[in-house]
Length: 204
Image (cartoon, rainbow, N blue to C red):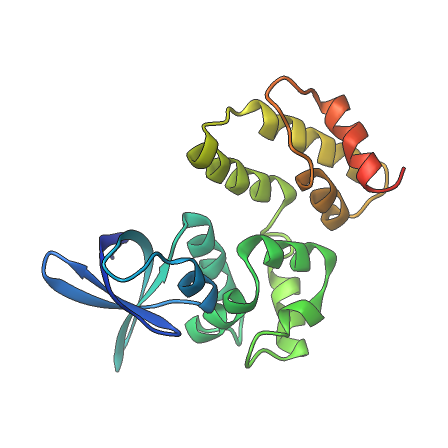
């Protein structure tokens, strides 16, 4: 199995890229969302990969983050969602948007993906609703924030606890996640402060 590839972008298509690694060009299938975030041709990039093998095919599917790769792995466990369908979903929504949709039962949002009907979207929600969580989304975002700004773990803990408090107050997981993620949390903020700001964004 190939965990990731790091090399120079030789070509970018609508649904694939050619990545040159040690003078070998790898054709990697990607979502439209990934294509939009790639640097230009000639730039170096690290792509996390999923290897799909069957009798008549050997394909690599690529993602810019481990989070995107993990949500893709979960998507393709759903009956009716193969690798092509998984990329279609991630072409119209990010991994976080997909979590929102699953947690809130928003089948229509998922069904916006080409080739994904409402019934298949409902199956995605049914199969994955116990496999995604508010905390998972925060962990992924915090990892991204650390890479971008060197933030510590305190903000993540305060967000988690505030989201749990909102859920205890009767808000849905999706509402809680959206509210808390809108807040910029500094390292010295505690859960109560984050909760108060979250309630403000919700008009309370």
